[in-house]
Length: 451
Image: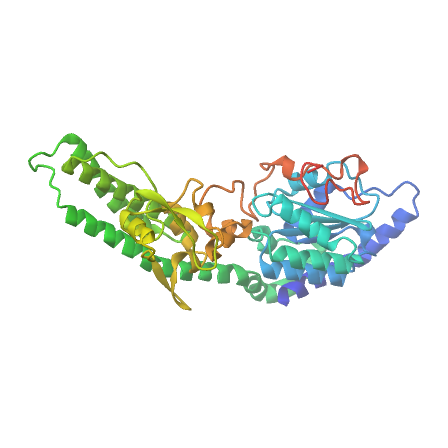
């Protein structure tokens, strides 16, 4: 890789100088001091792997480079630091996260011990705990850190920070070294930049493709809503119309126009949540208007029919067991409630997938925001238990790629430059008081100690 070649050439220029400095420090009693944490953080803002000069015996330059390339190619906010065994441990994770200012997952190898912490927006406490437990006792630093990174890249949410590809120097590279390698950087700069941006482009293309597939379904929803408006055939000046009816009708019209406008402006799947929220709100306004005109009691505000939101607001919760799944209560329209009571199948919303027509909950991750707009407020997880979409939406990586869909995972997404604005509980515990190692690491990756 050109990017890897550039970093390697720069580091080769630095190594002799570092070796001389290290030799001078060895020869001077009391001269050794731990690398300042701000320098470690500066290096991690430029590259995902930092190896302290006093810890190079643990992880060679070539192995560190290969590990960094793996993380950068995956485009995930995973940071690895290899520090000497006697490095100060008090508040180490919290202070490193503050100095770095980047949301992500941080793994630290300290001598022969290892632990990790993460912003909960990219990886849950339990997931970090599991990752750390899985690699403890994995052998030497190279094996352990590669295992950790491989597992982490499959689970962590978000994207790599833009500072890894902004063209700045890397591991605190001196100006002289940059000048020396200027010709190489100039020759390979375009190619290196293109390579580093490959995964981000691919992700953006996948998001655009998902949005276009989703657009077909959302347009069907908006069209169906517009047809409902036409069928109602309400005229604000008709006999018997009052201000409440006119307000309902205006609300429905506004929701229809808002849905069209929001969908036209959508650039990623998570933008669709606002569209389906508008459609759901407009449909309820129509149901309220119909009840007023017919002299019926006003409907209770309920979520739409689970099987197909185009059926309109639900009227009751019914027991339903999907094929091969667990029984759950779902909101249903009157027609589907009757079908279920008669032992018949409900009319389920199916959409086109590469495997043919499938229910929306088995059609792919982009339908999370679509369903979240209809079934927000915490109801959706219970409805989707055991489905493909439900399993996806329960992961932080899904939230980072498609939005939470329901609820709010909170925080910044991985790779965001959030500075000191983060939950310190995510990074506290463990190192404080010298508890590093011996299996007593604040619960092996748990946050806040003792969880």
